[in-house]
Length: 173
Image (cartoon, rainbow, N blue to C red; front, side):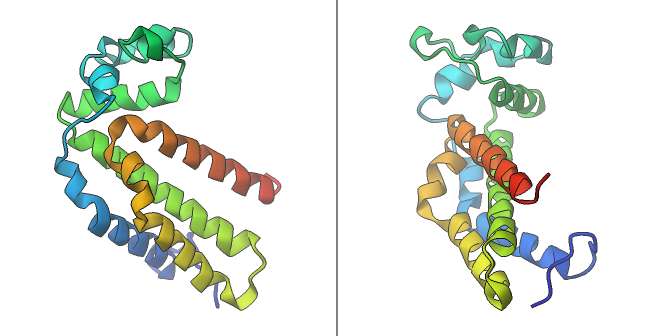
């Protein structure tokens, strides 16, 4: 089967990303109206560090910026950067935080598709197997937590960076 070309935006190269986006939207779009839950109160709602982007440099060196709870202090600078950007966009209205989590989940599914298609030596079966694997990741209930629970964004960011690094290494980049 012919490989999907990402360089042809009007052609079939957009079919798989659109299909995965549609599957994710159908599965998780009801979470866009969801509230902050669990740890979100101390990492987002009560966290003064994400209220301004001027604090961004401190995210890389000050564990007090992660949360207001002393026992949960940690350094997660990229997570905090994304939370601060969300705060700039929608304040404490959770919709934009959920949209970013959905976008990160979509990137994970695209990376799964690409890795399975390009690195598992499946020959003619590469496309359908890769699409099946990506759809499985896209809609599996196990992913409900990192998609709907905003503070679990750290798991999505980890997955994106890990899968991207694996793909780059497998491509000798």
